Length: 98
Image 1: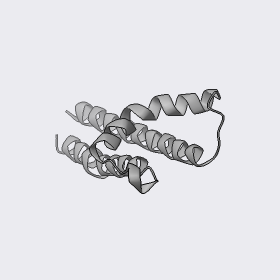
Image 2: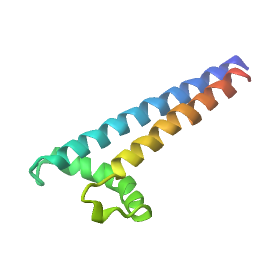
Image 3: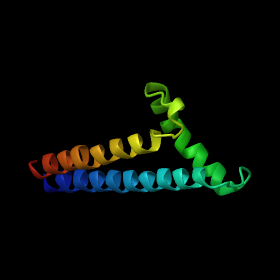
């Protein structure tokens, strides 16, 4: 049974790392949106393609267009932090109780 427990803990840690990487990608995208980045740069294109499917629904749910600042990256980062602190830790605790 300890093998299954270790496997689930390893999966939870991988999910944690993936969420952290995605959070940094969103941060880089937010920083690039502040400067006048070349829209034809491959890194900029990659950042927009990877983050837009997550940021677009948040913009639809919370329309803050008249504020003048896009708060969707902050909201997505808060969601990622919630998933890391709640979901990943819960999965680890459940695996250790196996």
